[in-house]
Image (cartoon, rainbow, N blue to C red; front, side, top):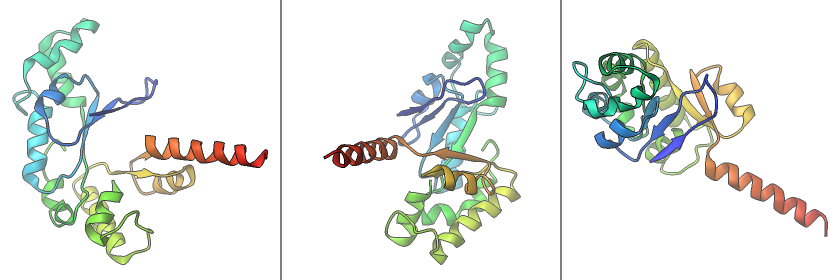
Length: 193
């Protein structure tokens, strides 16, 4: 499980996991979840069921304990959580693209894995017709169903471009940030010789 957190009142803290785990969702204490490899509407419904309290889902009451720290009673916490918890479902495979309409129709509801599934390699260059068609289909269907769409951007210039199309953009990721820092430091070290 990976926590993506920024110290800001305007930024939601999300939990990313390698799959659906109701216990992690119950006790993570995050404002939302990111679940990869959603391939079918059943996958999407399963995530929603574990992220929402009854009557919208199956989430257990024990996970309402974080509200106590702020003086929020259990019924209020559960109602607020059902309305505010972000559920980010990642469509990252050919099967997911084929089922995107049915996935987006589920109430309550990254490009590299999609490239690998469709193209057989990663990262996508961004100009491959199959990849562009898949992305366009996901965007169109998500918009049709009133769903937010997001993606990962490798740098600020890409993020600026992506924000014209997507509702949310994650800028970089830990491995890329470390790699970029390390390469810049190596360049500095070698330039002083």
